[in-house]
Picture 1 (cartoon, rainbow, N blue to C red):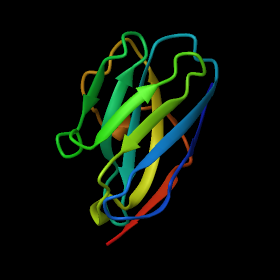
Picture 2: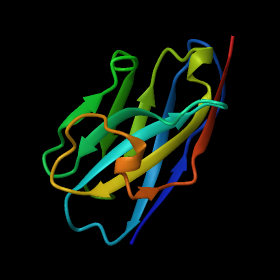
Picture 3: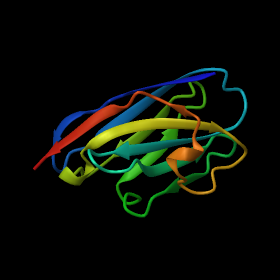
Length: 126
């Protein structure tokens, strides 16, 4: 069983930056595809970025690849999402996700991930 706990969200002004964290615990000694998703009110959950723990390979959604950076601390197993140049369109609940597999194969869909955190809210004002 894998437990994920996000933190680092908050209210920021447009143009600012945030670094979201995902604390990972539980049995995670195999390789995983880990990712960040977000969901705004009335919208579907959107994949942002993934990282494969075996190789460190990353994938990004085209809409965010210039501003978002996914990373991982191999010692603590924590996952991070650096978000720069925030704009009101980034306002959403942000979720960390994980799925035990041997590749990521792109950003993927929410339905492909078995483990989820509770989310952290990001609100951007203009």
